[in-house]
Length: 65
Image 1 (spheres, one colour):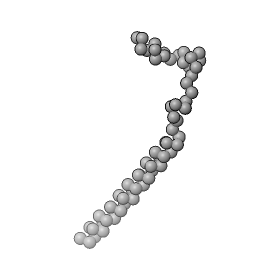
Image 2: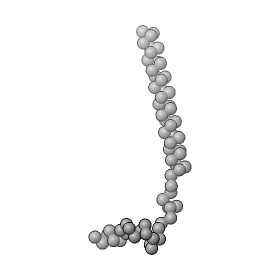
Image 3: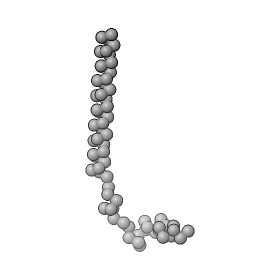
């Protein structure tokens, strides 16, 4: 019985360590994403006469259909 309790305690410690590692990794990934992510408001919009905007239909042309 003592051997079974020791085995269960050992597996619980392993699971706690694994869960803490995954949680720390998720925290770091979220923190890095917050640093690296681009704010859509800071991206400059293309001018109306540029080639990029003329190849894609504008919102007003899509609504007219």
